[in-house]
Each structure stands twice: as C-alpha cells, then as structure tokens.
Amino acid sequence: RYAAFRQRYGPERYWWLSFFQVFLLQGGLAFVISAPLQLSASAPATDVMTPVDWIGLALFVVGFAFEAIGDAPLLAFQRNPAMRGRVLDTGLWRYTRHPNYFGECVLGWGLWICALDQPLGWATVFAPLLMTFLLLKVSGVAMLDAHLSSSKPGYRDYIR
Image (cartoon, rainbow, N blue to C red):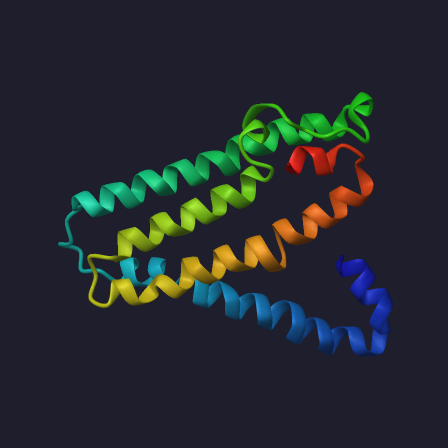
C-alpha cells in the first residue's frame, strides 16, 4: 500500500504527503485511541485492582490471545502453495473472519474498562468506539473483505 502511495505521488510530493497522511495521521490516531491506557497509567501507585479492572484485564487477555494465536495458522496457510486461492476457515477463522481485528477491538474495550475507575474514565469511551469503527468500516475489515472477495472465489460464501 505504501509503495503504491509512493509511486502515485512521486518522489517530490511523497515526503510531504506521507508525513501528513501516514505519520501524523497514524500518530494522532494512536494518541487518541490510547487515551484509556494513558489514563490508567497515570493512576496513583496505590491504585488497587477492582473487580472492574479484572474484567478489563480478562478482555484484554482474550483480545491479545486472538491476535497472537491467529498469526501462526495464517502464516502457515499463506506459505502452503496448496492453499493458494482458498479461504482459511479453521481454527480462530472458524469463529471470526478476522481474528486480529476482533482481538484488537476486544483488547481496546478491555483497556477502556480498566480506565473506568479513574476520574472521567468513562469519557475515554471515544477511543474503543473510534478503533472499532475504523477497523470495521474504514481500514480493516471493509478493505480486506473487498480485496479477498475479488481475489478468492469462496470468500463471499465464507462471509455468509
């Protein structure tokens, strides 16, 4: 994607456009989306784990597990020439088309729940909402589903 971006805008404009559209945009989004984590990290050292924190931690672990566990079978699937053009629908892919995106969303909601016991922690709800929206409708699932639907014959059936 970034190579195409570089080719489309040429060497003269690529530097400025990539600085603003790639680095500043992603840096700004990372800052906004990490608001619950920033708030939780600023808690006093005497802050104790509450039942709500344990629920948030459990969600974080589930999300992290989906991301970590989902990578190995995907890599093996992609490296297997016999699977070219086929759809990965085993393991975590049996339950979700995109374990990494699902895991990232669950992880983000877990971090938000951990921030709830901080002053104004509830107000950081914009972070997991934004991340979920971006992953589902903008840069994650929507883009990948469109690409895979056009390149893998059985993918539309898999979506259904």
